[in-house]
Amino acid sequence: MTDAATTEATEAAAVSEQRRVRQEKRARLLEEGRQPYPVSVGRTHSLREVRSRWASLATGEETQDVVGVAGRVVFLRNTGKLCFATLQEGLSTADTGVRLQVMLSLAEVGEEALAAWKADVDLGDFVYVRGRVVSSRRGELSVMAGSWELASKALRPLPNLYTELSEETRVRQRYADLTVREEARQMVLTRAKVTRSIRDTLHRHDFLEVETPVLQLVHGGAHARPFPTHLNAFDVDMTLRIALELYLKRAVVGGVDRVYEMGRIFRNEGVDSTHSPEFTMLEFYEAWGDQKTVADLTRQIILDVADVLGTRQIETPAGVIDLDGEWRWLGVYPGLSAVLGEEVLPETSLERLHAIATARGVALDPAWGEQKVVMELFAELVEPTLLQPTFVCDYPPIAQPLARPHRSDPALIEAWDLFIGGVERGTGFSELIDPVIQRERLTAQSLEAAAGDPEAMQLDEDFLDALELGAPPMGGVGLGLDRLIMLFTGVGIRESILFPLLRPGS
Image 1 (spheres, one colour):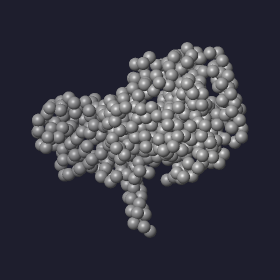
Image 2 (cartoon, rainbow, N blue to C red):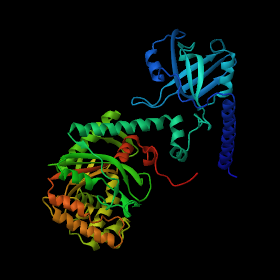
Image 3 (cartoon, rainbow, N blue to C red):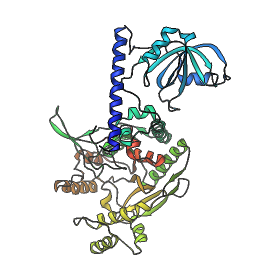
Image 4 (cartoon, rainbow, N blue to C red):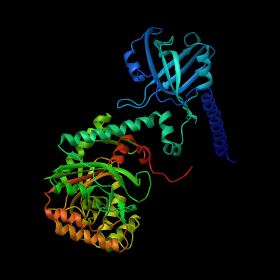
């Protein structure tokens, strides 16, 4: 057995023994007629309220102010006549969990209550303490207990506060991770700040938030493999949505000129440091806008998030990202040409593109056409170099079947992908509102689906009916919330999602 396996086995045995001891304590409490899980306790103040109201106590100062506080025991030290514990409460919108010391002395609580504390309370338990607010001889704000009560008995031990959890344990047991790791609690708070900031920005620009179906008869709005399911009530096959787009555009047709949704998306694809099968997407659509106006709003959304989090400069291993700097626009063909040192145009032959790919070591699928090969070359050779905010634009039409043809070059479309830190963070375009051209593109997609492409969109007759009713010119954006949080925190997607989807395991 390896050293790591031996350590794991030893830790597992210790946890098993702890669980046995705690189970016995629970049984004993019940036999004694004491409740290890009372319905409620006499809590009068939160720990943060005590911290705030009595923050000015001098070292050793005592008050006659009595409070009832409760929290999880994260530190415990029992001596003969005096016991100390640190209680921790949950997150708030402003902090990641306040801690407060409680003290139990023989003189204050009596022999029986002190003995019960020593016998009953373990790390991880929730306890209620009623007593006077004091400052200890070391200047620690505390509650000197006059009485106490168990609020909830923990049957599993807390992770060790001083031993870092493995990444696998952190994401599989996030509930345990949150109890002991400040960074985990901070991530929850950060995510809440980001989503609130996004909503604030959009509301300030007169956008309305709506909800659209998660279960859909026809999958569309993106080039992605869906999760199939079946609706028993109607006996029809359905899918989980791969995008928010098509229903939000229906709302614009109906007169909701500025509309958005922040919701879960499901794509039955690969899992890596930047991809999760279940993730959160922001999509917004602006009537009378285009790719430029929605790009401006996307920039404002990200800058507002940066301000909420406290910085517009982001340190990365590749260098500092300056969100206050230029957000440049880079065409796909000019950008690829600059890296290659030769001009690549929409008319460049497939043979020449294959030669370039071979010379640069870029693997291609022989079935790909010119447009797809150009996009693959750009993805491999240019995208990783885009550290500073860059709107990659003027894509070939294959990139976005729902984007309108470019107003000055029919070989291109009015679409962009926003890259920051070498990673795509969002996409936007001038929306295609011509129902005839949209039908042609969706028909072509449906033929690809029929030929076996699991990511191709299907023909959505109801969506086309909506467009035929008439849609105003509009711009739209899809922004990955998880990837935005990754940008500001430097973590992988599994850390940015509170409870990520994981491979089944122990």
